[in-house]
Every structure is written in structure tokens, then in C-alpha cells.
Image (cartoon, rainbow, N blue to C red):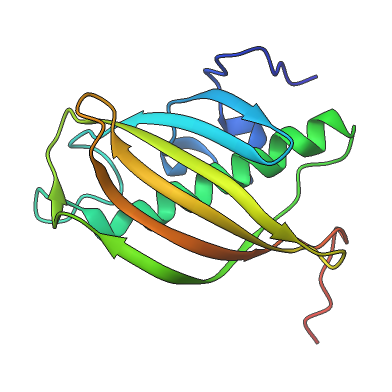
Length: 153
């Protein structure tokens, strides 16, 4: 059984990711329609390119926070963790080009709508936790079907 006591320091069981691809360090809060997570930007982050963490990479942090929220909801409903698909984003805004190493980020995701098919929209923010400055924001469109297998043929 996955422990949902806060803070959740082992995020991996809540995501269909493993190892170094899990980019969130901990979940600090979650509820019926939101999740807050934190992560440190490290030099060994898989999204670092040419010694730079581009703020554009925050879209993956947002998507993982949404996936972690979904994982928490699955655990509470006693369901298997499901795959989720990032379909796109609207109003994606970046307020800086890159994020320095050793920056502690706070990722906030809030569901603004969800339908019965598994399509959802989440409003997302990535902030520098120390300064409170917003570094990136956007609305992410995601799809998480309840079926365990997708018919792709």
C-alpha cells in the first residue's frame, strides 16, 4: 500500500515513471482537485542541456505533478495507477529563460475541469520557492483513460 501521509517523499510509486525520470522530490499537499510538489534543480537532472535547465522544461514538471495527483486519487480509490497523456497546453508563459542549479521549485496544479472520458485541464504554476516569483504557468490538457489497455489498432 502506498503511504499518502504528507509530505510524500517517495513520489515514484504514484507515477508511471521510474528512476531518474521521476523529477519531483516531494508532494507537500494534495486534495480533490489540486497538488503541490517541490523539486530541486540539480546538474544531473535529465532535462539539463548544455549545463542549463531551460524554463521550458517546466512543462514536464507540471505534467508529473498532474500525474502524481492522479496517482494519489487512484490510491484513494483503490485503483491501479494509470497512464496519462499530455495533449497540449494553452496560455503557456515563461518569465525567465533558464533556472539556476540549486533552485527549489514549487509546482502547483489545480484541476479546472474533468470529463467522464478522462480528459482534464489543469492550471499550473512553477514558482521559485524562496522568492515566490512565478517562473512558468499554463493550462495543460491531459488525458488519462480508465482502461488499462488502449486499442491503438
